[in-house]
Length: 376
Image (tube, rainbow, N blue to C red; front, side):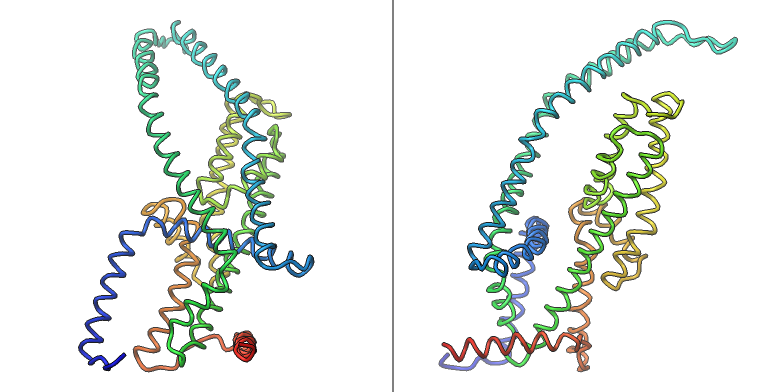
C-alpha cells in the first residue's frame, strides 16, 4: 500500500463492510441451518477419521474418504432396505382405513339408543361422505405441495452432504483461516474463544446423546409395561428421533398409536381404542416431563445456561424458525455469550474473562506452528 488510509476512510470502509455483511447474511440466512447441521455431523464423524488415521496409519484425505463414503452408503442404503416393508405396511394401513370408514358408515346408518335418548346420525352421513370426498379431491393439489417440499428438502440434503465432506477434509485449514483474520496480537484470544466454543458444542452433543438414551430407555420401559407390540423397536425409535425436538417423539408415538389401534395390548384386558388413549396419556406425561424438566436441566448444565432460558429458547426457536433451529439454538446462544463476553471486555477496556485452563492446548498449537515455520 503506497499511502496509509486516513481515520475517516477506515471508519467509513468498516461501516460499509458491516452493512454489506448484514445484508448478505440476511439474504443468505436460509443456508445457515443446513451448514450448522453439516458442522454438527462433521464434528461427530471427525473422531472416526482420527481413529482411521491413528490405528490404520492412513493419510487424512484417505481416512476422510473412507469414513465419509461408508457413512453415506449406509444412509443411502437404509431406505432401500426398509422401503419394501414400508410399502406393505402402508397398503395394510390403507386397507384398515377403508374398513374403518365402511364400519363407521354402517354404524352411523342405524339409530343410536342410549336409554330413552335416540340419536339418528343418518342425516349426517351425506356431510361425512362429502367431507371425505373433499379430502380425496384435494389430494392431487396436496401431492404437488408435497413434491415441491420434498424437492426443496432434497436440495438442502445435497448441500449438507457436500458441506460435511469439505468440512471433514479441510476443517483445520478453515479454522486457521478464520483465526488468522485477527491481528497477530489478538490471535491467542481468538484461539481461546474458539476452544471455549468448541468445548461448549462438545458438551451440548454429549447432553443430546444422554437425552436420547434416557428418553429411549424410559419410553421402552413404559411401552413394555403396558404390553405394546414392538415396544423395543418403538422405544429405540423414540430415543433416536428425539434429536428433532418434540416432532421426533411425536412421530414415534403416532406409530405406537397405530399399532395400538390395530393390534391392541399383549396382556391388558382393554379395547384397542382405550389402549391407544392410554398410550397418548403416557406420551403426554413423559414428553412434558422431558420438555419442562429433563431437557432444560441437561442442556443448561452442559452449556452453562439457566434451564429456564434453555426452555424458552427452544420453544421460541420452534415457533419462529421451525424444528431444525431448535436443534442448534442452545449452543448458538452459548457461543454468542462467549463472544459477547469478550467484546464487552474490549469495549469497556476490561481484561477479557477467558478460560486460562485452555492455555496449554493453545501453547501446543503455537509450538506446532513454529515447527512448521522452521521447516518451511
